[in-house]
Length: 80
Image (cartoon, rainbow, N blue to C red; front, side, top):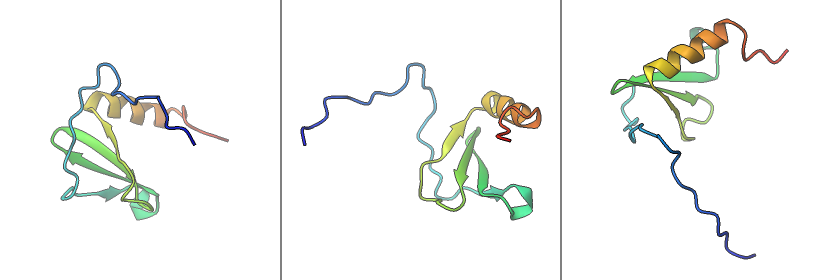
């Protein structure tokens, strides 16, 4: 198979640092019944899948997190 010539570059405007999440205080939603965990680290909010904690985490600024939570409360992500 030929080597890929596509380069992966960071997104334009990406200003989020590489956070050390090794000592993060991960908290589960839904009284521990959900599959999502969040941690507040260095002024950012990290979110991960508790079933695969070694997978990459999503990193949000406080403004992005606020918009995400508001959208979830308003049903923007309902799949049914």
